[in-house]
Image 1: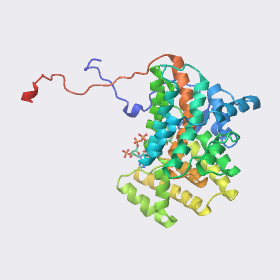
Image 2: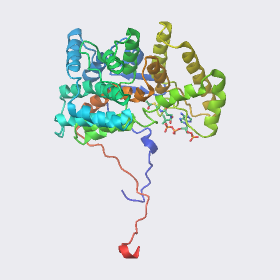
Image 3: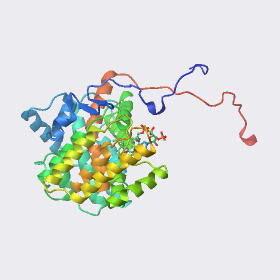
Length: 385
Ligand code: ACO
């Protein structure tokens, strides 16, 4: 590119369209999220995670027979190879974060033969990886907290088995419903940073494990999937409604960001926050949630929105998915440390679907940069520098 051509850099690639997809549509002005043809609120509270996985991978919700087949394919592939367990046990000794352990754990699945440059559209291979992700998280969580691992239970669906492997006891039906709702809610979301990462890796005809490992690394950051833990910490630090305003004001005065608010695309309320707020209300109505925490979360949200408008007028900062993620996942008994890994367990369905879609295009993703350094450097021998 000639240096005298004026080219605008799209900071953060904002507004740049880099993929044509059938997987999801995010309308940031209307506050609408469509997953493979279905508005999120149409199915999130009703479908199981497996049904939504089938929708994303095949373009339709499964028939009863297809669902049975999907369930047994996942359930029979959940156990971890020994090499993965050894790696996770070693990581637990050093108390590595669960996201780092998940990233390394997925990488070990290459030992089972993903070294070919492309897995094409072999969904059985992707299913095997999907089946093992929840087991990696649960195995590692228990190892890190000094508990013996719980073997997966083939009779349970994905959400129920995940809760079972984490806690070691059969989960409450309401908790399973809330987790299915959560997993459905975050399964895919346009060209977010982790999905873009997965697509870039797929575009080079690299393998699926590499795409998942890269995507987990991108999701981990607090500006993307790492926000719900800090969002809940903020609510606990606030502790009582009257402390919300001084606490948030102080944070904004210091120029800090409030986790769980703001979004690159949504300029109105994130529709996923609504779905999860409804899931939290349902847990509360059925006596499966802490009413005082729920009231505090509502109060903190209202205070944060009011103060964000005062300190950042016109930026249209609204509640994003992470704020209510924290409430729902905490209520069903998950520890903060595994909020983001649980996000990854769901989003892996989206990453794999995007991987297949991107590979089908056969085109490498390769944007450009503008060089703004000097052009007249002269070699100086090392002794003279
Ligand atoms: N708290 C306070 N101020 C904020 C926040 C926030 N949460 N979000 C944005 N702002 C401010 C910025 O400081 C900036 O102010 P300025 O105009 O005075 O410089 C303005 O709003 C615009 O912010 P950008 O950084 O340009 O917005 P961008 O689209 O790049 O960032 C992001 C979006 C990363 C989500 C941001 O809103 C943020 O950091 N939020 C908090 C982290 C979070 O909740 N992440 C989860 C997102 S959802 C997900 O990924 C699943």
